[in-house]
Length: 306
Image (cartoon, rainbow, N blue to C red):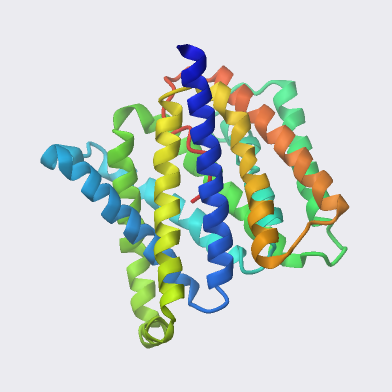
């Protein structure tokens, strides 16, 4: 039944949001003990390995790509997004960072108008303004609450918006599973020189890390990769327009995980700002989907930064 399939899709989307909330909180926790560059490399290396095992079931055909340049460009944009997320999470509370980072749907609207010259309606521009208004409420410039650190999630959302625009133009040309493999592979390969440059520092930190921290590194790779697979399955069970509002449940999961690990609770204004961002972002995402003339794609629909 259609209703049951949609309900399953929503459940999978909520599970994906929970995975990303756990991943972000674990990254923030481990960043106090281990080099962030190590965590970033491990996250992408695990995805490449996991997707390679997945694709190997179909032999070599699963690894074939018709657009290698696109795969590397997509991987580089997502790596920039992840790098900003990994480092930014060390500077801000998880929930507030997550909310600011989820401005990507309103940024996609701006990029569609300025870069792709799409016709953007007045309601969508009003949602763009509302989303950035919510960000200002969270950040409160001049208040000294976050300072320059608040720029990091905004840059992350900008990179991810560019990633989404690029992906939406190419998504119908590649298998999402193949794309996820090359995203992990390109991310791991691009980070490797930085990892090697840190050399002795990273190696010493890894050797000195207790087994619990090493297991948490594996956990980051597992929940991030599994979360994106859940997104693929979710969009296979329900339309994008049905699922998009539930993406913002990730803010709620980030709040819960942040409280559980760090006992952090946002103040009143932060709650208001996050609610405004979630409302405007969900509405923008829904309008973007409704106005889209291209076929729905699992990859293009991936709006949660990893």
